Length: 498
Image 1 (tube, rainbow, N blue to C red):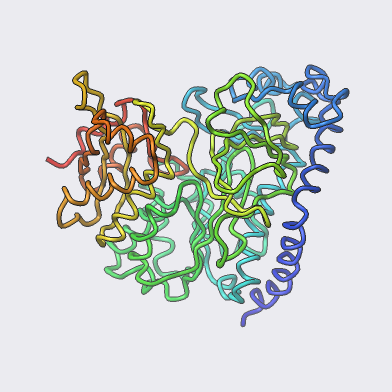
Image 2 (image 1 turned 45 degrees about the vertical axis):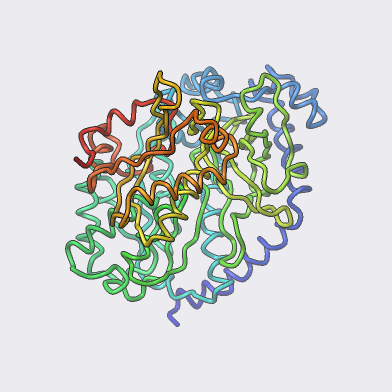
């Protein structure tokens, strides 16, 4: 055992015990965070506008502060950008995390001195929990990829501003810097394919032990490595043992990623966003991600079918139920108040509180009242793929609406790594899987309102080429799983199989 992994073990054990202790006091921790947020928030411009100094209970808070999205928060962000202090949180943010929104254009999410530990320590805790549980500390001695957006930050109102991953790059502990790849210069490359080629060049002969990124990016990286070396990734990096992922559901990518590696490695899932680091996988043996209940964020949960109501039900942690889909609402020491982050979650356990990310509020299909969500389409496709030995590279689903009764259907655009032996039978299987997951979809098929789904194959690298064509290749950009219109379906036409 080398010096670094030797030192990491006792620290991992210490953190693991802390995480175990806090997971069993999640509700009192949440209540304490609520009180702390109120105490600080009352002195801000937002707090004065919403009379937070008069609020004593969670119910009074909900009456005072409605749920909002970025557009509704934007007037306060603009005041911060003008150089004003004490607007959403005390003082001013130490960073703006710059992120793209579908309706708001560029969004500027504040990160404060109080909130930055949530982003840094949560990723660390996920790794240390794995280390303590598994006993594997060897990866700490090898090279690790913490791929980020460019760490070069611009300044807005004298506040350093950039992609969250680029900001976090500045906070990687010094004891890991020596092991970190790619180099700072390579991370600063903006053009994704040039950056990827340079990453391959820098890492192909290194002792890579941990690789971190969103699954589509990792698959592109693995494909380039295999193309250049003629070897599976696990053969190229014999000490590679830990894969850290987040940003999208892992299941659609899992089979092909592990096939590219050529063997199993430990996979650690995380749930980070520009607005906060919400949950992480604390165990290789338990389903779901442990909610970050003691990290400066007070969570609220809105039943998905009420999310667009004027006065939806807003639940605290102690009120949630296993198996229900909730929109995730956050209040944080970054100054985000009753902020709808756009993700939906489902608890798989309440002792402790573990969840899965079930989809995006805006990513669903309900062109006919079926309200099909991401979790359902991913399950339906991956079950059929596993049973048929098929690997999926990427996919998206859109409605095909016909004016003739009984002629409408869901069209699935799928890029296959290997095609099913019988495409018609495969489509039928996916369709039946979806019927078992969504009773409304089943009713529409039974009632001949919808035809069974149809699959349209996409050419190899078609989704990559599409993302490149719209300037969204690489980084944290993701292909939407579901649409309620045909915009993405039409845009994919040049990359469909003939």
